[in-house]
Image 1 (tube, rainbow, N blue to C red):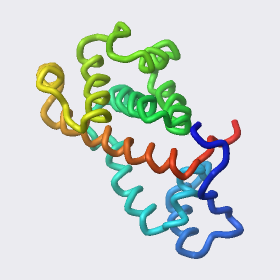
Image 2 (image 1 turned 30 degrees about the vertical axis):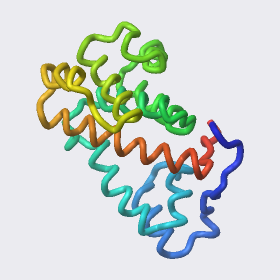
Image 3 (image 1 turned 45 degrees about the horizontal axis):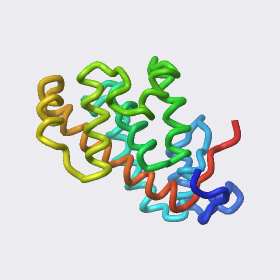
Amino acid sequence: MRLSTPRIHPVTDADMDDEQREVIESLTEGRRRLNVYRTLARAPKALKAYLAWGSYIVSKRNALSPREREIVILRVGVLCRSGYEVAQHTRIALETGMSAQEIAHIKEGAEAGWPPAEAALIRAADELVADHFVSEATWTVLRSAYSEKQCVDVVLTAGQYVQTCMFLNTFGVQVEAG
């Protein structure tokens, strides 16, 4: 975590206005109301738009498998030094069947014993975060292992989570207890 306290505090149930309540309740039916959403609820129209796009990234419409998607998301979280993102997606990655050791290897990078296709996902995330561009060498490996649609989704997934890490870090969104 870059900040030990929030710069923008999550909205509480008691403090929500009708517009905030509507967007939070539509999102969290039966689920925990995470600080990431409670914080963005300070701008409810932005949260609603963010959720619409983000739902594509984490859905089956994204051509990446859940494992591939989590490799990209976790690598972006590590590179952006987003403690919140890494904590949330470590839990999600474990649910996709990734091991704790594999998650640790994401922090080490593409040279940590990954199969070529997954190493290319990590390299793509590295290059997108550092240079906003996937090199020809990495693209060649991606295209040999993944469909054109999957390659599009690699870039879109990385971009979505760079943006997410930017506001998590800047607003000081704190990891929930437990």
